[in-house]
Image (cartoon, rainbow, N blue to C red; front, side):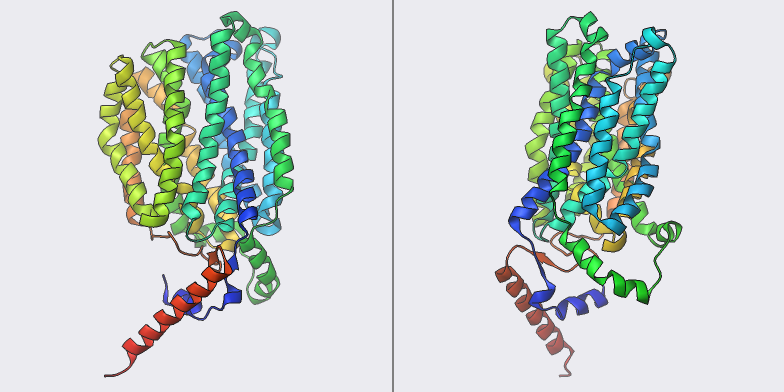
Length: 479
């Protein structure tokens, strides 16, 4: 913490401290997490239907080529996510987080719903995969403003002491959405004949996006803006007179160091994420030869176990800090990726599950910490913009492309261990990034006042700061 920040905090009064309404906090967390649930419901559905989607939209190709083409369309949406971040991020910093998050919710729902309407290749030829690509691009553009906004919204609504735990609900929503989508597809595969799934069954999960999206939109429209953004808006007129607004390029240049840290952390987070959630179901069936239902069920059980672990790590980071937990996960990827994939490649169901469970446990070190760690890298007035751009740039280059690149590497090299080497590389980058971080647990967000749960807690904080200031004055007096 800088000397200027310490001085500013020492001169705080009770009125300068934000007291968070617990009911509003719970509503904010629920609404933000619901958007992530919606986004990852689509990812779970698409990942578990990747083989069928490949057969429906790319019927003339080989099985491997169909899978690569299906993941290629999946990855294409990530290429436009930084553009979505560049559009929605500045809008969120200028007009409010709540308004933008309501818009991204309905846009995501429309993109997902439209996938279910697209005719097959057998019906309209090359237009079918083109329309699939367009729908995925709409999804990618809208999600460019989703995660950065949702993480910012929860971080700015949370108290300093519980920001890690509250933020972990965002990734709890991710796992819940993925598990919901995956469970639905698995149940349909178990019940419906293969031809029925090919003809019409695969469309049903995408159609469910409409009611889910409308419910999420209703919840988000009833939210209030975050206390940190309200405070920023109150000061905006004065700030605009005292200094010019930064353009996008100037902001990126001025925030280059925290942006690089954000990109490194998101790379670590999302390589493990998409390897486990998007690529692994197809790896188990297409590469290792497990039955489709067995592969799907194994990943689902691991996802279910990861949900409480994510909340556990979020709680622990409020006590022991974010850096130790992220560092533990990165070191785990470096040391345990090869043993995990050796277990997965054994073909023994218990060993396969053990390998998946290790990867899932390591990933929760990131899912429980990143929603609180990433927003803390940036100041309030550019937090949404910088996080949306940094997050989506990293996801586009390294996260969403993980299933495509690993599928191509395995097919090209005929080495089933390539995914493990890929994760080890992410672990190395993650460890280097963690060493550059400052600890942010139990501290105010940059550019924001301290946030507490009650007035009594605010008075205790003021007393604590006064005592610290008194000790500092005593230390500075000559003997």
